[in-house]
Length: 317
Image (cartoon, rainbow, N blue to C red):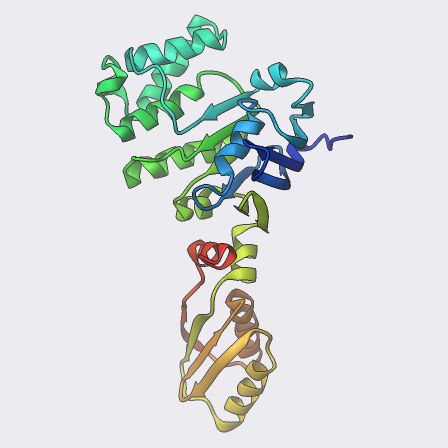
């Protein structure tokens, strides 16, 4: 198989079964560009964590091909381990202090001591771990442990970072700080694969999203594309500065009636009220239409579909 040099991760027809009967991952194919943040979403048991474990060489695939930074996972697992970072749901090194966690990671990754010291101090400050640096990890709360898990991964350089629900237990402020940090790293060329149960996080951080169900990829695209394709029926209300004339009402009504995705609408007085699918596209069309008629708009209220709406529609609850 020839891989695209621009692909950081390339998965083709991946299968993983634990018992030889049921596939935890079932003919899964997707790719991730270099420097992209790719979200892998799904219900509990959908196959997300199994996929991550295969891609990070923790468990072998049953069938299919995987390339990470152009390296064949079956032929070069040791080489792949040297260029990836992994934050999993499990914890490690809870017998020692926060500070020593960074030092152990630096030693394992053969990072020079001076570099470990510099990065450790920066990461401890950034992840609000300063007051905890001499505490043993088993003394920390769940959110504090998770902060440490994410922070210490950045002690070493990597091409691809796998984040499996990295913000569990964090408060909203720290969660946003961590996500912003990851986004900045991606701008610098780091490729990130991201799984989460908090869909607003995926909406905020991911360049593209793949949704898997029963081990299969059932939807993929940017957040906007997924909302346009799968978002449930939503409402748009446009209020004009002046009451519409009868001719204007008729013109607008005919335009809306012929627009794809509209399920119901009313044009009355100063207001236009529309219900339908693919509402972001309808909104753009309506603004262009009203502007072309030289009608002044006072207010737009747009009840947009959320990624939660998409997820519930795709996996059928």
